[in-house]
Amino acid sequence: MQTIFGSHGAIAPFQLVRPATINDAAAALADGAGACLAGGVDLLPALRAGRRVNRVVYLGGIHALKAVSRTDRAIAIGAGVTHHRLANDSEIARALPDLAGIWRNVANVRVRHAATIGGNLMARNPQYDALPALQALGARLIFAGADSRAQATDAGAADWPDGLLSAVEIPLVERRFGFDRSMKPVLSLAVSLEARDGKLSGRAAVGCAHQRPVCLALDFAGARDWGAVAARADAIADAFAADLAEPDTDWIASGGYRSTLVRVLLARQLTALARR
Amino acid sequence: MSEPIAISLTLNGRALRATVAPNRVLADLIRQDQALTGTKIGCDQGTCGACTVLVDGIVTASCSTFAWQVDGKMVTTIEGVATNGALDPVQESFKSRSAFQCGYCTPGMILLAKALLAADPNPSRATIRDWISANVCRCTGYQMIIEAVEDAAQRVREGAQ
Image 1 (spheres, rainbow over the protein chains, first blue to last red):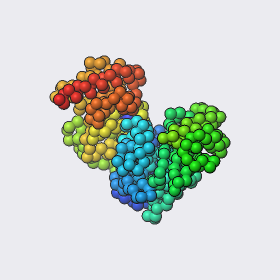
Image 2: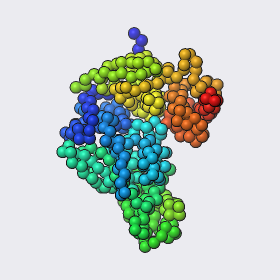
Image 3: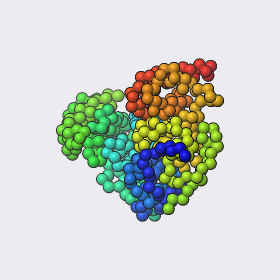
Image 4: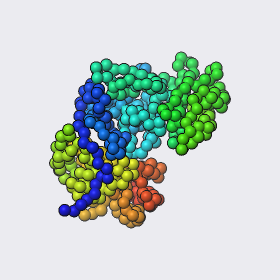
């Protein structure tokens, strides 16, 4: 018989569970012995590299994880929504046009079609883009527990609840959002400038520079309009960088270089967004 | 622990029933079970795109997709691109533009180009670059590949008129 070489690395056997509901999935994951599979972008290489799991819980058949719903105050995006849909869904584009536009350039076309927002977050890879973006947007993460109760936490929280990430919820406000990914893997920087009841505020989240992205509020030093923010962009960026925990030094870049980039990229983003 | 799963799919226009273990990937179903070795294995991590196939028209890394995930779907490999022995316009363009060197990435590149032209029959060069960036040509022959996709787009448009 002819020998045809196939996939190089064997994946250890596992039990496959294909729940149809979020609650069933949460129950299947409750004992900690299972691994979630959605797009498979992270899990399959890990399994091939030798990670062993007793149970794979396939989330692709859960329609509720792919739901997008909007109220006056927020838009909820299911954890199973792919990057492609995040970039192209009309409801998301209406609510968050900046985010949708930026997401058209995340990863590549093959990954965008397969990978999900939930997978991007739960991979906990400091190089990934979803968490800094959601931190800057002030999003909440909604987790479903095995007891059918949902728990919400800020995307910027240090600890997340146990359970299955079911959705991300992004508040809808008057907003200007930017995400500079041009210096990855050294640094990424997401910035959200917001106006509520005439009051300006903002957040910036730094990715790739720490073990997990770090988000801080921006101090506009009393600026009352976007023109004033643009005029003070350098000072605002300097203050932000001074407050930020020392970025990591690793084989990619030094912490000092990353700090410099934070100042430079933030000042540029502030200027561009405030003048828009 | 891992019960075999019965699946049925359409592979290159032909109905196929198979029984697969949960840990069997699509690339192995295609290459080993169906002997369709045009689908290549490169990085085996879903990064290089050599194993690209179309699943319901969407570019998919067959090395990083379990076989049971294509149950009920339509899978196209490079062997399914030509029609009755006649090359597809994308294949003709790759041939006429010599858009291959070692050829290992070519099946994935052609399927990627097919999907691109289905989504955007008149892609800009920037769009072509964006799509092609999903696949790696280790010979670095990207310029000819980009030109071949532009040529294919023109052939497809002219064919549609």
